[in-house]
Image (cartoon, rainbow, N blue to C red; front, side, top):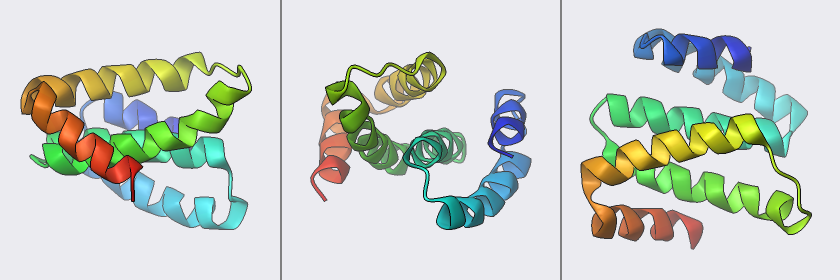
Length: 111
């Protein structure tokens, strides 16, 4: 389901993607996969940005970045997730400006 949600998201159907990711949250509750949760956070950040909530997107990206920390510490690199994170965070950073982005991104990392 995550793959379908990401595909729909990339196609620009943000309402349908949001619906799929809401369902995906229930799957995440059952599976408890940190990788899926991280991807979910990044996708929801993109949806938030598309719906005019860039500060919420920055907070979600901060949480996603925190989820990446254990993988980085072990030298594990996830190219698809990393590229998605980079693309969404760059878009949000441009929209908010560096200082505002950093403020909201850091807020979520610390809470």
